Amino acid sequence: MSTDAQHKPLSDADKLRQDAASAAQVRALTNHPDVIALRTEKVRTQVDAAIWIGIFLGLAFTMVNVQTFAAAGAAPWSLPWLSAWLLDPMVSLVLVAVLRAEQVTARYQVQTGVWAHRTKWFAFLATYVMNTWKSWVALDVAGVVLHSVPPVLVFLAAETAPVLRDRLTEAVIKAGQAATGSTPEVMPASSPTPVDHPAADTTEAAVTVPVPTVPEPAPAEQDKPVRRAPAKRKAPAKRKTAGRKLAADYVNEARAAWAPGIEITPAWIREVTDCGRGTSSTVAAQLRTQIEAETATTVTTTPTGPAGLTDERAAA
Image (cartoon, rainbow, N blue to C red; front, side):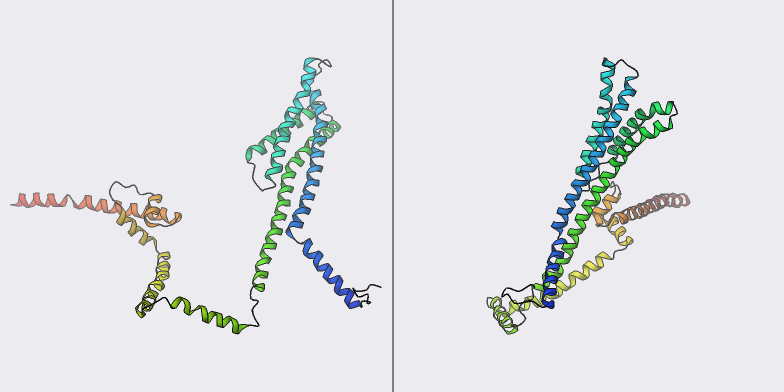
């Protein structure tokens, strides 16, 4: 029978209460983001170790087949036979280098780019062709299957490992976001503690309020905030109207700022009117059309003056 600190027997309710408190502590620690990150790192280490072991075993299996393919019947221990052993490690080392880099970039969810995938594909295809060439030439189905499994498995492991590391990192990030999302609900609950002493708070507020008003000597200075109040209230109204500008308003502003010799571009429109990128293209097109129309009107109206004068002189 379990007892408390005073060696008194505990009831069933007390036992359940202790079990509930212990379970709540275990659950809180289990869902803690640091504990989740630690467990995820252990899983990540196990996954990386298993994948690397499988990759190295597959590359070791393919090395013999590649050496046989590269030697092409050369005499054992001759120079061509010895140099044939360098072909597979050359391809495998490049593949391992790319996989090692992706092991770090996938941890922080950074994309390695297209060339990393192209390098893996080329290394896989080269290893696969050199392993299965003789089997395909001889149409040996069993040989094709036997020599296809290791390189295909290495390729699948190379493509799957970054995805698994990325998902493990995403799990840690989501655990941290869930924890930070719950903290704002806890913080304000602990802040409003002075509930039983409203009188003390009101007196402190009453004492602190007149302190800044004492240095103000004249009542005229007290009228100044009243005069400034409408100006402060009008400021947000201007912001609201500024946010409701139409394309025609931006065209008028840009037309007022335009001068001959200035090239009308969306970048220049944004500098003059502070409009967005999507609106700047439309305003630039409308302004060009407007200026072209004005120029055409000026060109057509200008020769009428001299023509009219010549006609009047001719009539005279």
